[in-house]
Image (cartoon, rainbow, N blue to C red; front, side, top):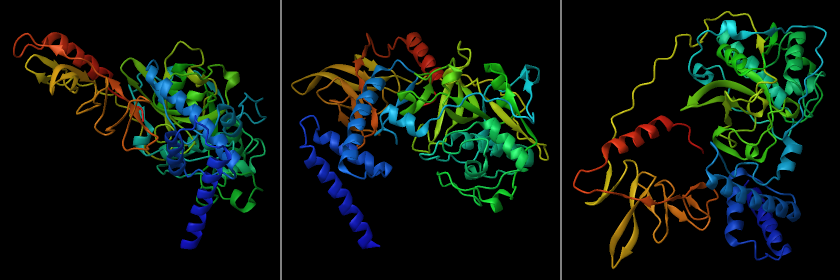
Length: 475
């Protein structure tokens, strides 16, 4: 075993050296960029077959890193991007491997679905809902390079309704759908309604434990196909409106089609997404699962479970903005939503009581004194802006609590990311890290005209506003 590991390490070292020497290590390939790329490769277990492929991945990584730095420093969007597992892929490569067009199909002969106006059943929905908290959502899965997102969206919907109606959360087999559902196209794409129909006709679906996922098209295992751990009676398509989708989500997790083809979706790392994806239903190319909804200040969002593993997004999830003026919602999320139906035999975990009113904001804390004549708002750090003969002549405020002040610069970093990489505008945990947070600029400290003079009303209004906006953090 030790010999095998040593051989594997030597192969990786050989490929890295081959890459460096075959490219002549051009001037634009800085040692920092190479080191960041190597750290990223180790983190994500990425191995390339030959030096040319390695070089291509490195070039994509450089371009994506530049995009991440520019996008995050802009600060104009409600979400963040990062160097996630897809950072060595161009956007076109990403689309070719992970996305498939999901077109609205012609209805099958056996009509188990009905169109419903759900408003009549949705008089007072909770202000927020997260089905994960009710034990009806399985852990995030990974479809790999197989275009089987439709299968994961389908099993997620069935797993959810089965846990709600039967009281048992069972992880179901995506591989059975890929192999045995001839109405869909396996790793080349599919549609959730077709899959629901297939499960109905088959009398049920097997468990993931018995029919595990391989991520490739294989011959259907008839013996396992005959094992029916969970069954459904029908399915329904959701009205193509924000309200219809909300009312459906109040009942159970919902299978949805979305457009996931944009670069900021590929590299999504946190926050409420309202980015460059298309809102045209004809551009839907991915399937996912809505497992709840919430709000951050005046911005509402869907909680969406993806099937790209936990190293993408927020541990495998994305928050997509809802209640916009787009006819089909952000990423066309309203356009192809559906859910399975199952007879109930267990008390529903549905959070029927209305949520209590949010608590009032806590008492505002005291400001941070820099010296007797200047101060910063609470939760900010005093940093020196101008120093002379060992004394700070002018103070500024850093919008991080217990921040690290980057000496000789206008920037500061949070305590958790104490290394100031101000050249790239980043704060990192240790030298060589490829992941971090954006360095913030120091702002001029406020002046006090007498002891205890903090412009209290203005300061309190600022604190109350920050308290209301505090919420989802980008990762």
